[in-house]
Image 1 (cartoon, one colour):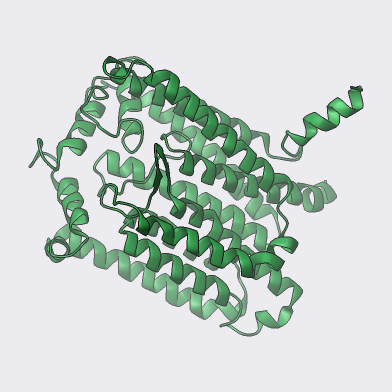
Image 2 (cartoon, rainbow, N blue to C red; image 1 turned 180 degrees about the vertical axis):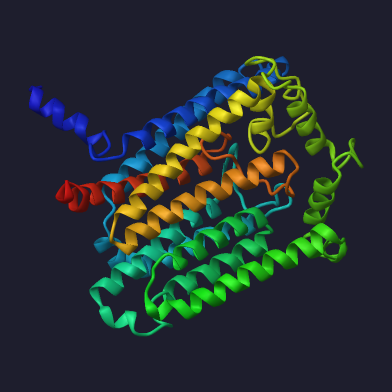
Length: 402
C-alpha cells in the first residue's frame, strides 16, 4: 500500500484537523479518568465475580469506540442541508424509539430503559443532542427562508412541538433529571438568537423560568407541601429524594443509605484522599459506585485535588465552546455550541450537587466518567457536532479574519 493511500485511510479515522485540540484532550483525559475509576469501583466485586474487571474494561472500550465513531460521524458527515431535508422522517422515528422503554420493566423508579439481556439502553439520552440540532435547524431554515423571521410563531414552531412531545414522554417515564436537563437545554437554545420577533417570547420565558424555580424552592425547600403531595402520586420516589437531601441521616439503613454513604466517603477523603484504589465505600456501601455515585468514590480516593482536576477539564471544554460561540456570527452555530455547554454543565451540576446532597439526587450520570454506554455515546455525538461547527467557524470566519 502506498504512503498516500495509507495517509488517506488514516485520515478517514481521524477527526477534522480544524477541530479544537483543547476540547479533544480534555475529553480524552476525562474518559481515561472515568475508565480507571470504573475499574477501581468494580474491584470489590471480584470476590463473587472473578472476571468482573476484564468484563468492565471490555465494555468500557466498546462504549468509547462507539462514542468515537458517533463523534467522527457528526464531525465529518453532519450537514444542515441533508438533515433539514430528512428531519420530517427522523423526528417520528426518534420519538417512536423514545416510547419503546414503556414495553420494558421499570428500573430505579423510571421507565427509561430498553433492557435486552445484559445490554441496557436509555433512548432519552439522545433527546438532549436531538433537541439542540432541531433548534439549530430552525435557524438554518430561517436563513434560507427569511419570511420565518417575521412570524413569531413560525421560527421555532417545529422545535416547540418536538420539545413538548419529548417532555410528555420523559414525564411519563418519571425521569425528572433528564427532563430538567432537556428543559434547560431547550430554553437556552431558543434564548440565544437575538431576533426582534423573539424578544417578547424570550422575556416571558425568562420570567416563567424564574417563577418555576422560586415555586419549586418554596414548595420543596422551605416547606414540605410539594413532598406531601408527591407521596400520593407515582412520583413518590422524588419525595423520598427531597427528604434525603434535607437530612440524609434520618434513615441511614433505608432510603438514606446511598446519600449517607456518599457523604461518609467524601468526608473520609481528608482533603488529599485515601489514594487511588483505596476507597472503602465501593465495597458494597454504594451500589451505584461506578455510575451515579462515581464522583463520591473519586473524591474519596483523590480528595479535593481529584475534584479540582475534573472541574478544570470541564472548565476547559466549557470555555472553548463559548469562546467559539462568541466568535461566530452564525446563530445556528451559537445555538449548538451554547446548547452543548448547557447540556454539559447541567449534568455536572445535577450529579455533583446530588452526590454532595446540596440538591435532591436526580440519578443523572457524570458525563465521560460514569459507566453506561448510552450517556458516553450521546455526549461524544454532541461533542462531534460541536467540533463540526468549530471547524466551520475556523475555516469560514476566523481564518478569513486572521
